[in-house]
Amino acid sequence: MTAKAIRIEPSAPIGEGPKPANDTADERLKTRAQRLGPVSGPDEMRSLRRKLLQTESRLSKLEALLEFEDAVRKCRTFRELVYCIANKPLDLVESRQILIFRARGFRSDKVKLDAVSSLSSVDANAPKVRALEDALGKVLKVAMQREETVVGQPLAFGRHEDSSALAGTLVPLLDDRKLPFAALVFVSANNKVSEAQPIHALVGDVARHAWLKLQPRRRATGSIRLPRYLSAVLAVASIIVMFIPVSLTALAPVEIVARDAQVVAAPIDGIIEEILVEPNSIVSKGKPLFRFVDTTLASNRDIANEKKLVAIARLNTAQQNSFGNGEGKRDLAIAEAELQLALRELAYAESQLAKAVVASSRDGVAVFDRKSDWQGRPIAVGERVLEIADPRSVEAEMFLPVSDAIVLHKDAEVRLFLDSSPLSAIPATVKSASYRAVPHEGKEASYRVVARISGEEDALLRIGTRGTAQVFGETTTLGFFLFRKPLAYIRQWIGW
Image (cartoon, rainbow, N blue to C red; front, side, top):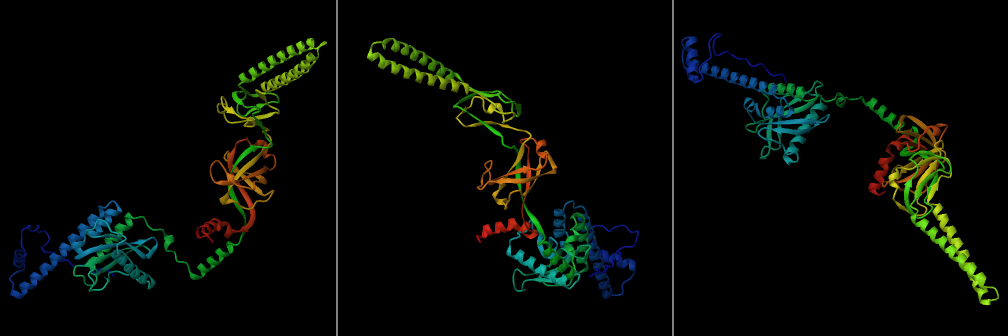
């Protein structure tokens, strides 16, 4: 409702100075009576006294209202404003307490008790607080359904005989769309339901104006009410859209690797003394790649050579003693066997020494990380040291996580988005996929998928380039594509 204007009668003529602060009401009454002339009797005196007291009461309320407006204007934060509204106008509205409720989100029927007079904070989980919030929410909901503007409505919470019951006046704060974003409840001093006073509406207007200035406005989308037929059309359209056929896709990390690369492994047990080429350098066939420490191998070769010389000497002695001597002929056969054994040991030692330097068997690029990772490191036979790859023959290697696994067929479509060129997609097709998932880089188990790069793009890609691959699977509906993961999570959670 619209607040009635308060008529204020001046207590002194214009131009007269202020009254002393220590004047009593009787003295002021006598002074006014003297100005007005003689008073006929006590009845007129009492009437004059009553008018004077009413005028002074209105002036005091006006002064308190102006002080409240000034305090509100000085608030710099929203919390300061709420505290000022809850405590400053108590004497002005003659209320025991002021409760401040705030709407939750865009729903005006869900409110939260934000502040209470004389309290620094409100316990949101207290039973009485929840009861107050539910009761006020129902009142606002009924008002919105009736399309009424609730201003200064008498309000009562709980039964009158209950010690926790509250009674007072409700003043909603409305925004530009006539929707309540907050509400003030002035609790009566005598805990009785009473009609709203004009001062309640004035305090509400001051609080509403300051509140909207300090608090950011709610978005208008929260209050849009679509017609029922339009809501039904949108619902049907959303259901139809969910049946649009789309390709089921998944994302996986990808790396450009060499195709049919030659693995250079350790031919012998030993310690690598030196890597003879730089990482990712071009090598030619027969070029030495790395060298083992050959001290032991050279010693074994020298010992085998000495054993060969000893065997040759024994053979010569046995040949000289074999003429005309049967026992000498028997020693000759043993000496010949020992010489053959020494020669084989020497050949083995020389072959092992020759393996101390490993050379490239083809032209290409030596692919490995750092030389310091291998120098001085003991390795066993068959351990991979580096690869010799053809830089013009590459393919894409992907690791598809188990959580994103989809059904893949040979020659399925793949799009590569490399970190070096994220805006351009490189077409590829699935070449093979592993049957069993294995942990990848110590993380989630993944399936290894190899893709063949289409066209001449493979000749321009650098080995080791990483990025993200989009793998296309079978055709499905848009609804399943959007809710595939949530449905899988729900099934895992409920065990169905």
